[in-house]
Length: 368
Image 1 (cartoon, rainbow, N blue to C red):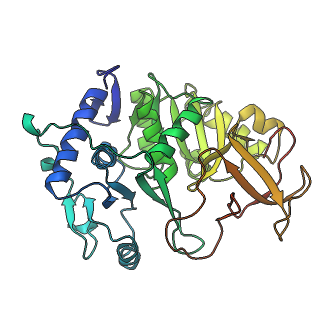
Image 2: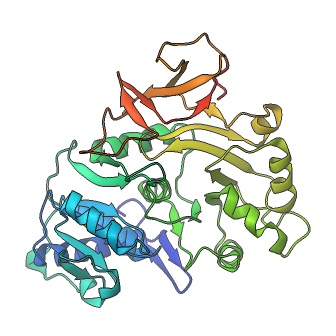
Image 3: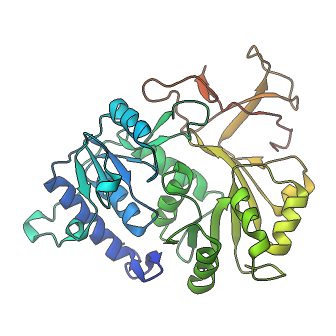
């Protein structure tokens, strides 16, 4: 905000918010949260749809030292009750009572949240220890109760710095997260773009119309989505050639891409396809561009420079290089445990390694 105050930070269909305006909105929301009794260390659930306000709220909570926990807006009542009992949030921030959680104070994300702050209250951010929690990310819960991963201020910024070495998101980038902000990967990617001085483009929903409108109107340079979602839209694309030829990258996460899938995406969507492999627990682990994916059938990408990987047998003994087996990873800034109790299932930390529950192999050139 100080270096380039007038550059766009957040772009919605009906407005653009500069970095200076974003900083002011964050200050105002932080003041409102303090007025509502929130303080450093409080855990706060966020139940908001994809919007500029969602990111403002998360940054404002960080400014006062509170810990954000993004939650999907459609979670059923029994899961919300279990969440409240497990994390004892100090509040839930939502658009209305329909997104409230029984027994948890509700703070409405309405016009009052962004009221001007009197001069005497325009204090500096709370001094937060680098090892204090910024947010708690929850896994999908497909293998049992969602597991909780703590991302500290230090770890989040450290991961951003590592990624800047391989994919700089700086001024001029217009990034569209075509996934829910409640998931850690797209939410963190938005923060990384903002940290670098780029702009995040927010769509009102995850639909083909919203995607086409945003890319065409706002000059989107990078899109993050899942391959399943993009393939679902292929037959409805309004062009026989690449629909988005100007994209610098369509980053896909969630599954391997075969050479046939890559060629289809290059022909129908954009020539610039990138596949990412990672997890809520440890972030980005491997990545491969279209040329790599076409040359290396079966590979999900090449390991990031800060990641070490091995395969082991069912007893945990390391296997020879290149041998297929149970994958495990460790690297700079990796956590060593989950927060609190969790159900058994895929994904665990053991002996300094993270085991995501995946099976594969690592080749000598670090292809995964």
